[in-house]
Length: 18
Image (cartoon, rainbow, N blue to C red; front, side, top):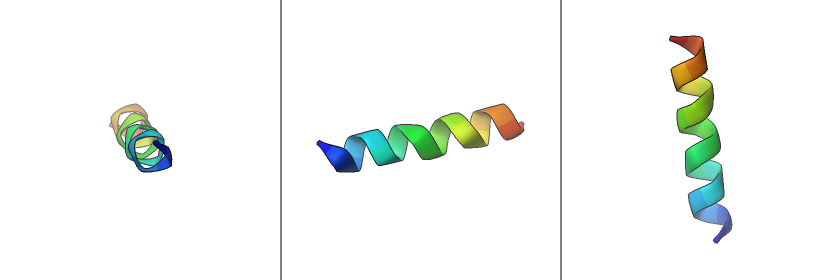
């Protein structure tokens, strides 16, 4: 499920960016 992994990566980056 690459789509899910990609989505999680984007969310993670967004969260880290704050």
